[in-house]
Image (cartoon, rainbow, N blue to C red):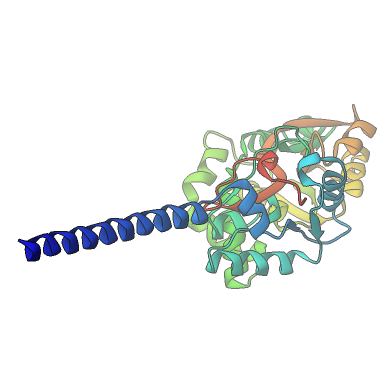
Length: 308
């Protein structure tokens, strides 16, 4: 009988120890789950409260500096400026390691075709919101070139089409005009959308001006191809934005596909108001902002937390 009591007592002690161990394991598991949970606080800390930017002289770099100075949730953050190439290298390394990073971003750019990244919502429109990139013509262009003007008005590209072409240029290490030569062959159906039902041209010569950004060269050279397929000769000249607007307003150029409005080129548009015609968007939803890889569990700039 005594032996039986001792046995039962021993079994009871073993059971207590097992239950206690299970309880510790459960607590540790819960603790580990809590430790691994991503929150705005932990993500901001893993980012070292740093926005990875581009060239310090870029317009959006000034916007980011102002944000850090004035937005409560960005107090104590650092804006790491360097170059676009350096920013893209940091982004690539972070994605390879599946680490959080927040970058200065803009569209169109091949980064959105190459990587799974997303803009953080900008509820206060700190970056000013989306823009349309418009086609502008000189006064009298439609009267002098009615057939060409119809093609220009029909011309429109989707943003993701431009970004895919920019990625081709980057990966193949060839200039954008050469990318266009292949693209128009592979996308004849899109070109036909601009020219279907339009009469052949009369062989006139059209002067097109465009900024030197690759994102603007691609639409310009696609339009050049569409016009030349209808009998026109098109000369494309790269200029800075001020000269682009002045050339259209003075009549020394006929058309551009590269007017970012209402924000980026708004001052030029206002200065030359009434001296050009708007011919619709070349593409839409151009923007600047902060972006993160899609695996980062943030949705808005306001989700970032201060470095306290």
